[in-house]
Image 1 (cartoon, rainbow, N blue to C red):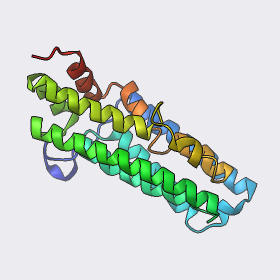
Image 2 (cartoon, rainbow, N blue to C red; image 1 turned 60 degrees about the vertical axis):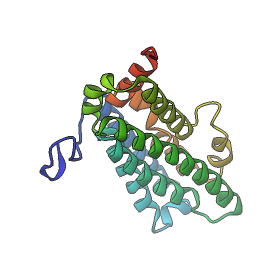
Image 3 (cartoon, rainbow, N blue to C red; image 1 turned 135 degrees about the vertical axis):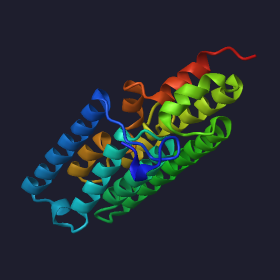
Image 4 (cartoon, rainbow, N blue to C red; image 1 turned 120 degrees about the horizontal axis):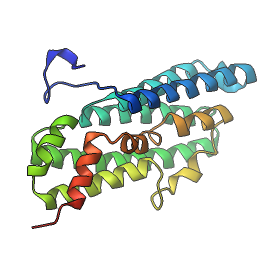
Length: 217
């Protein structure tokens, strides 16, 4: 589905295949279970006015990231997830929560910077950020430049997914919020999206693999 009747590569496309739909459904199921637990537990989270709004905003970001067909739109959904997850971590206003939120936010913003750099370079090389178009024109681009873009993408996704060795922010952040929020963040946050994107073999991940496997001229 293309938004606003702007055809690709200019319009924002939403695509759903078996893998992306399954991951979106899994994130929704986890969010529902966490919300039910928060209500049954009767803790401080469920009594806050902004808790349910943040959970729904986080779920919207995760679902959009799984279903998008455009890399810049993926960046937008990453930011939606980051804002919501940051708001969930700081709930409670304890000093340890604020400290964890600062580390979580800073390193995720750094990963976002690398992601935006990769998108700018990729658009300059290919003239498109639509995933299907990237697969069509990537083999024609300079392999050295595309290898650099792939390296930036892998670094950005690795930081957001807390993959070793760029996972220093994870133990400093995830133990600070409540049990409900700690259970929600691994399944419905910026950390949950990069690896499923690779698992569903989305076009930009396949393009990165092509770039790494092509010999430099």
